[in-house]
Structure formats: C-alpha cells, structure tokens
Amino acid sequence: MPTLVLSRPSGDAGWLVRTTFLVDEVVVARLRPGGRAQLTLAPGTYAMRATTPGGASLTSELTLREGESAHVVAEAGILPGALNPRRALQLRMSHYPYESGKA
Image (cartoon, rainbow, N blue to C red; front, top):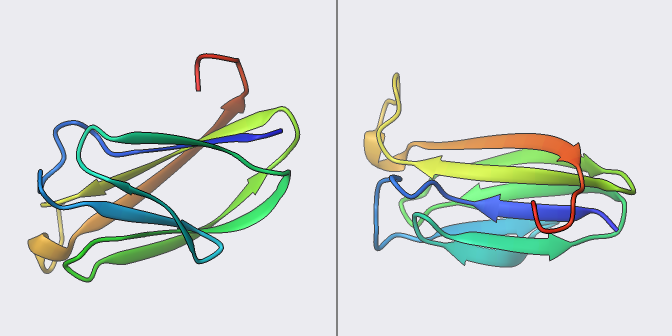
C-alpha cells in the first residue's frame, strides 16, 4: 500500500498556526511547524489540499502507485513575490520508492 507523508518545515512561519491537510476534501492532519503525519492509502489519484486559517489554500493532484510513497510539504509565511505575506502558502510534492522506516 502506498504511503503519504505530510509535513511542515520546523522553521515555518506561524508557530501557533496549524496548516490543515485534506485528501479528497477529508481533513487528515492539522500540523504546526515541524509537524509530520503519515498515512497509508490505496493506490489511486487524490486531490490534495492545504489551507491556513489566514485564508490561503492550494490544491494539487497526487497519484500514488503500489510500492510508491509521496511526501507533501506545506510551507506558510513570507515567500518571495507574495502579494500578501500573511496568506502565502506553498505546496511541494515529491515521490520516491517506499522504504519502511524512511517515509
């Protein structure tokens, strides 16, 4: 079964602010900076979304295959070129072969 790891960098802005992660519009995690969650999902394509209480929201499609894992990182705070730094949010996704204990 594919593994999905969700995280926020430890140096991310807004220590008290939690970023909410949704998979197919179902809340699966609310993480503070440095937070991490791991899920096991069936192979398939999912709508990933991350939101902040400030109103920032990003959506992306993620396809997981058998034996594959993905790491989704949400970074909030001041990003270069952001029109409103308090609402800035960036979502990064990476895929890699699943290795037990390394996801």
